[in-house]
Length: 274
Image (tube, rainbow, N blue to C red):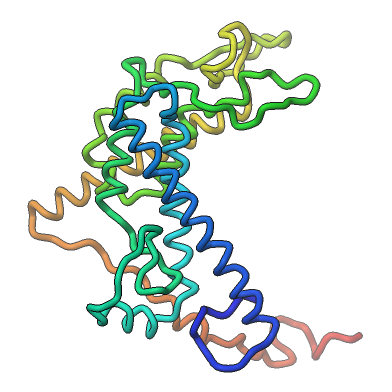
């Protein structure tokens, strides 16, 4: 069962115990991600290239946004409203709001981190390798697979951040999609067929396309296209004075019941025999 939101009801039980444990874990994760973002931005501002890592910054930012959004579902609306209405409540260093487990979305921090991430995109449309994802590998795994593939990083940013946050960086998005378009790899099969796809930039160029690289590249291309389409629609609506369609209300579906069919409907001739 889904854990009950913190502060959402009276009484105890296993469900509330699980909710409290999840809340503490999410809260700690948000603190760690917040600190990592601030630390990497400090290294970046100081020009300390030996300690600054754009991959650490990017994924710390993604974690911060993901977890801060998840925390909102674990705090009841009444507690959020009470905290927001109390002007004496303070915001602590670690992002806690009014002593509650919901850290505020620091939009200025997010914009600064996003600008730093895209500022590190090279002229070739790729990010530096950064720290490896893992330091040990099994037999047959190429060490180049240990590094983040740039299409994966860009797709994750587009999926996590709101479209308007990505608007100032459309030029960088176009630079990367240009790299994707110019680095399609082909491989001839013994049967005469051809395989087309992508290969990680961290691997030697010799060799054919790889499944996981191709999947990440296609995902990135699809997310980039959706981003541009969303922003274009928003611009057209703003220019023409329109408004976006409202989200569908799916609550009536939960009130629907299965229709009872008469026994002879469809030639059944009665209820099924057990």
